[in-house]
Image (cartoon, rainbow, N blue to C red; front, top):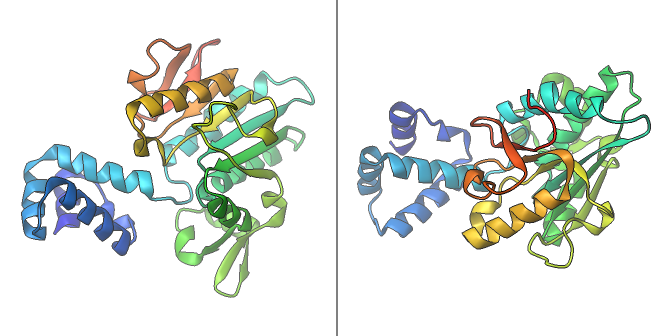
Length: 272
């Protein structure tokens, strides 16, 4: 009933998530609201659009998958990468950082898009990808690049054939793609360093920070966002899905790049 309410009343398809995961998140929301009956929660949800937003948000923030946002990856492919390439001198590398990479789905999605872009553009553009997380075990899992078939649902068929190899019940990311990504452990709240030490000087053309900001207080969110902005190149792009960035960037040299797409751009040249 809750899935039906979300879909029919609020046009939110939460049925795409793993059922056990969805139940866990619903239970968490019920606990916050001190509601003990599932039917009472369903009625509350039906009568309160704000709760539909909160449920969608908690599911989105904690659910990791390949190509989570079609809009964002479409922008990266069709607008952002071409714009970055235009301002690069020969021999300069496109630098991208997935901050809070979790189990790797995001950075591998980016890697596939960038690799395809470079292949179609005579294959000469250099690029360097970085991925970090505070949890060493999660980073290790991401480095392995191993996923079950059910996790590959958003991947295009040509990507599936080009970038994955079936090994029993596991699908492993092609090592040629994996070795293009520099994985590391990094704490976004570390006051000593702004970006992964492996990245040396930061200066990223794209930074993705999805899936984690909602875990922090507003003060900590502001700290993290400020650090990420400092790590961007002058015309770099910051992608913070669902982070309600507007309240943090009012006084920053950054502007919304695409309305409702959670993509922001350092000021320095005209947006598309």
